[in-house]
Image 1: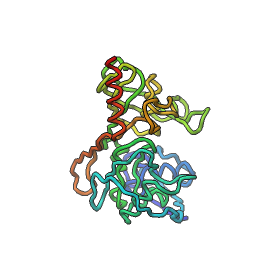
Image 2 (image 1 turned 120 degrees about the vertical axis):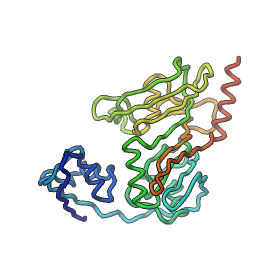
Image 3 (image 1 turned 90 degrees about the horizontal axis):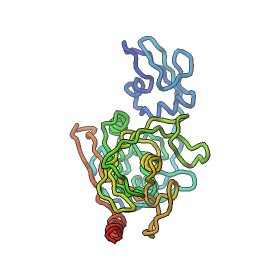
Image 4 (image 1 turned 90 degrees about the vertical axis):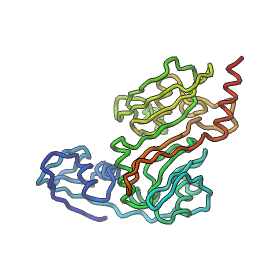
Length: 305
């Protein structure tokens, strides 16, 4: 356990997590986790990450040692959309878990990245090196990982500041009548099922999803969703909330009768970010997977009758 102390120097009030992120190599997410574990104190008192600090405040943090890594590199083929010395952008396939979790220690994206890269950022801890954000097991498409801590901090900050743009393509149940919409509804843990999220006012965080209708099939709708926030299962929860759950999503809707492959029909088709070293705005796109294209064909044919 490492202990660090800082003397606040900012003349104007600044959130604790933002201030420490600027002073250290810790991400704001990591700082928020430390605050939640009562490992950060301001002027001798445990502090929330949202606390405003000013010049003269004494900030102390106890930073736990990284747990020994027990994730084995695995030679798993990767569909690489882009790679350089700072970042790697992957088109993740359906069924691949992003990082290890209890009961899933192999076959993950992290296992594959450890074999391919050998040099990933460590900010998120040893169990999920390089991972800045995640997409669900059965969601396909663009995901970025970082190869060093500087790149990780820069991309994480873009996600926090909402300057990193992510667009998803989904097929949802039912016919959405209007062409565009904004779902602005807070998301938190479902009190009746801890494995699920839901729209709820208590113990929740703001969540906003924009959607645009691309095509209607009568009993289903093809939509593009743009995230303003990045909550767990956000699109899946929000689409269920407005009465149009993502097709194939057995957690928030029901099984898709057209597909052998199960899981939500949801694809992260584009990712736009500012490169952490060059400052260039870059957009990456992942083509729709074959099963998704086939399903669109089935729905188009069925809607003609």
